[in-house]
Length: 436
Ligand code: MEV
Image (tube, rainbow, N blue to C red; front, top):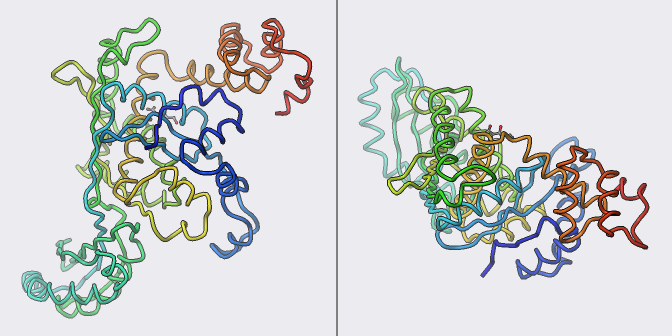
């Protein structure tokens, strides 16, 4: 059973972190290094993946810590270039853990395949004909995706939406099991379009999935006790109330909602990327869903619960896969999936969503109190302390000293380290330290 509590993980060296991570995951360090060492994919394989390849481009791969979902610990694989995101997500997940962690659930992995129709003269007759033939059409769809049907998925239902002026769109709902499902949905849409158009007495247009995959939503809830929210001079109740007001600000203002949701996607996207999933699809779906009521709204909301706890809730479409796609070619993505330790695409979607809720909470807690710059500087001070050679307890001591002195530089950190007696024979010269 994996534990996601790895106290002091951030203070370790890269080598130490690799060792602890491998141990936590029950794999050899070698396996981790083979998967991630060269960024997960070599140029030869990249060349077989997309067109006009001239190289590869690596990003940092980190572990999001402290996540507990439905009573189980998860390590979140996170690929992201933005400093503070992983620390903030891990820190907020620890706070949420104090209230029992996340409760999450995911819908069945159903994708929507769209068939556009126009020039339909009699919409009622088209609806009736399609309803009459639904059974046969679903069977025809299943015939186009036998592999998925063998894995327990397949076409489940047909829906007709009237877009006005003779325009209809037919949705075929396809249970894609552990696949993201874009290709499966597209295959189904193309296979059915001629027959659907003939039955409806119209002309077929586009045949493609919808990225507003709202049949495949994830719901996350958490209740954070106020005792876990306070820090420095801030009482927990005060922090809760400020977070609730920040959440209401996003309810009222789409300009704020966009940034609020960006902070949530800060937690979701890194998990999506680390597991080889299509983050453009996830982004498109999330923002379309955020605008479903005719105005752009926050995905994640925070309210005061009856018992005084801070209650977070989010519902978001997440079309993720744990088979096929990038996973076939990318060792890093396969390793990401191993880190996630999930058994299904639904479970992966829950993990990504929970990382999103944690990231959103971290951002609001900082923004509603000190602002985010202070935390960023504190984190930066830690990495500067480590770069200057600080280890173990010294990391915090040096970081605090240079942060308080307002001199967050490697030179200042080396000075503090020298005073602490932490620079001794064998410590690399300053030039080397700066280059690290
Ligand atoms: C920065 O990447 C994300 C934030 O702007 C999110 C927010 O404002 O809620 C801090």
